Image 1 (cartoon, chains in turn orange, green):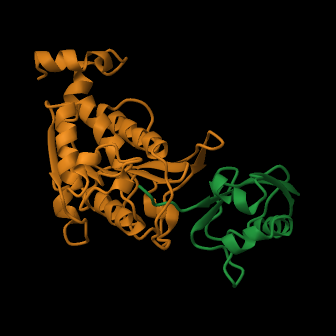
Image 2: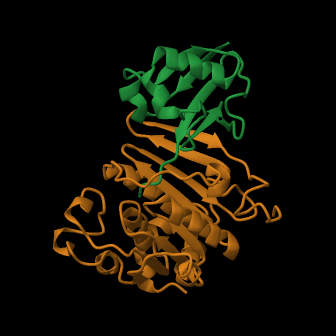
Length: 247
Length: 90
């Protein structure tokens, strides 16, 4: 049941055709897991918090550095040296005190991934490395919950939504390929765009509105200001999801 | 066959700032050969010493993946090839 305050707060989005009180109730009941409170995690968490997602669990083991501040808008100068989880929870709770924010300062590993995700309804991938992205993809598939992928490099970005057993997963796209982890170039506007696409997909999934970005890898090239879609299919030999029957 | 290869902006420095390049060939491999003839610096970026596509890249023809036999995949006149690199930054 929405409170009078929530009815006012979310009035403009509840006006969207098909959204209404029902859509807002669904957002309020949802538990979203965000892996990473960096360049992507910042806009994802901010826009999901202000949209009224009931519980946001955000995990990041890092501390804030000056060089993060061109893009990681959850954090500011006064947070330098502190845990990203702490500045994330402070900023998000200030933006919307009506939602529950659980911020955890831990590294996501094989051993704790499932426990960290716990009973979340979905996983949003805002990581900065491929191995953890694969780990989260596999965790989402094992738990049978949707996975919302996003990644950035320079002025370029990608996004894709994975519904386990129904659409191609991250491993179906990249086939377990590994690339060396290096410091990557990026400007804040790129994760802002991609993170907002991921947050939009989350809201669409929870409210049941629109068509999801499944079996399509969306590529954004800001320098040419072009969005390109690549068709992707489930790989029956995929080590992550190949054993799942099509739903 | 005349085919267009669309490159990401990150390759601009290796292709004289050209991102849409016309090439000739009957397979992806032949198209790449023509691409490297026009822009030799791209070869080191994309291929291994053994002449295979580096694992960090995927090729799509008209938006569809060519995995797993990228280089032998036939192309037809007017096809568009995208070279997509794996990105992981957040």
